[in-house]
Image 1 (spheres, rainbow, N blue to C red):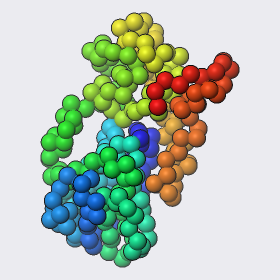
Image 2: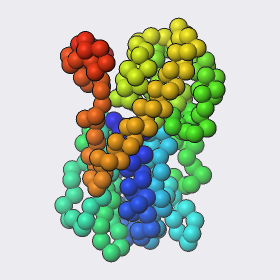
Image 3: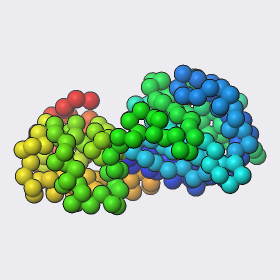
Image 4: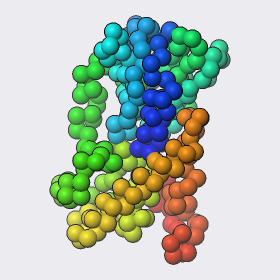
Length: 258
């Protein structure tokens, strides 16, 4: 599943390489993935791509006309959704949810082999209509999420630590992979309950969250371009490494979940 580091870099690459391009044609080959009518998708023709950005585990792509954002694409790739930047290619992969052709050549496509992602095409002031959007907490890398704010927020959210980090109402952008990495870095057990944490452990969790995500984002920046459809996880220390030696203590890692 694409998480905060992955989507941050995809947004940066789209902003760098596709912003300003004029849409020649927009279609939804696999319309089940798109929460919009064929007519609404087709109406993107003539708009200009704005600078993409990330919010939580959503990729946001504005479509501008006459200097104003007319529609916003909010894409939640879920497990296997990927964006592709391509040259002209008549062949369309199976399970392509969205195909945007640009004037002068080139395309932006969304492909989802599991067909689990969701693409919302809304007015720029319509993001709150997306399920869960208005309840989303601050991004895990938000500069305004200070240690003090983190301490305040964590007191309001009970449960096990791994589930807590993945709860977008607490902080947004963290999924299965980076929750594992953050908890390992913080030396906290995934199934431990938040209510048992001591103040210094809360601080340690915050520091680990910011450090792991910042480091991963920088690594992904160096690994991804130019192929934004490729997800890199080879540098992760513990996620999906059950049975291997722990990089810290050398003991065998035990897999919890997938």
